Length: 77
Image (tube, rainbow, N blue to C red; front, side, top):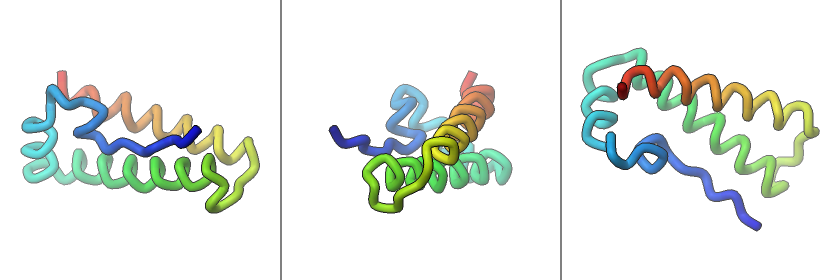
């Protein structure tokens, strides 16, 4: 089973326009999205064994991704 990474706009398609606008006007939001993208790709590469990593590191990355999503959602409400 492949774990295809999703960007923020794919995670929240109903907010795609708002996400685009926030990325352009809010540096903190843009940084959150960039960090989410980087961590999400790292998780994908670990899950697919492209860049092997131990389970503890993978779980820590997933916790970081979830925390980022929680913060990103606060901008979308």
